[in-house]
Image (tube, rainbow, N blue to C red; front, side):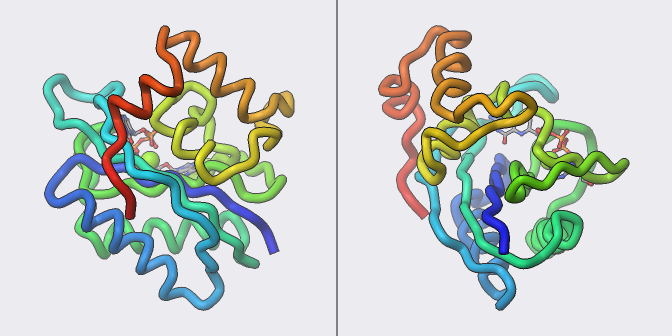
Length: 173
Ligand code: A4P
Ligand code: MG
């Protein structure tokens, strides 16, 4: 059994219900146990075409005996079932599921990189991750604790955790 963290994000259509449905569909799999849900955060789009709508972002903690590749397959099935169509990289989407961490697994295949390579750069991932993961969670590649990486990312953006939460809190699942 491994503890995994999956980031959810979307900015097209009724995103709150897409994220809820994504979690329900993950739960439909008896082999996946959803253990903890972060809050929902409304965040400005990072990258991609100018003028795209804000995102809703969240992170779920799950426990599963699936391999990273099998779990990615389930995530891609859920994205497809919710109408995700890939048009351009970082373009608007109904729902995106990213496998952030899968226990201590390290995968570097053409279709799958775990831990997620952009995990440490992004407040829209680190803040909800901190809702569901211990502050001491070691992050790749150097084992830096989550709390330290989060503090560095906040300093980089010139914002406090309190401000980020206040500006972006968008309720719960
Ligand atoms: N893939 C490889 N590794 C992984 C992994 N660990 N988890 C492959 C999930 N997928 C992984 O992804 C392309 C391919 O990456 C997948 O088919 C899978 O085989 P994609 O979801 O089609 O493409 P993408 O999401 O447009 O690109 P990418 O590089 O995954 O982007 P990110 O890093 O996911 O960023 N701004 C805000 N505020 N909130 C967001 O959620 N998301 C993005 C996308 C950009 N800006 C955002 C947000
Ligand atoms: Mg993605």
